Image (cartoon, rainbow, N blue to C red):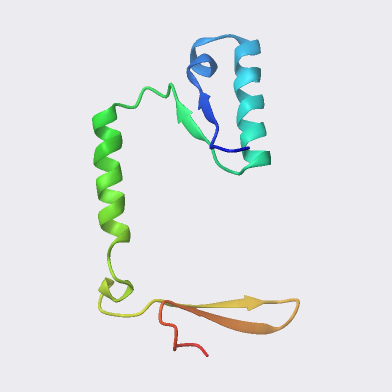
Length: 95
């Protein structure tokens, strides 16, 4: 597969059982083979999509320390191995 598949979901909402099954098969195929898909025919206005993209980019462009001035650290416990690992936004922390 050379590109991300585009799945038109309009038939799912507007069509019958066979249309819903066809859309479901396309989504399943895209998720099973590549893990990603682009959804079209959803009816969401282009302006809203553009606004959400801008907000998302602004959010993810923030430095990790911008959240209350602290580095976010999370401890994950693995019960089977009884190990605790630290995940940190700082490369030096948790080592």
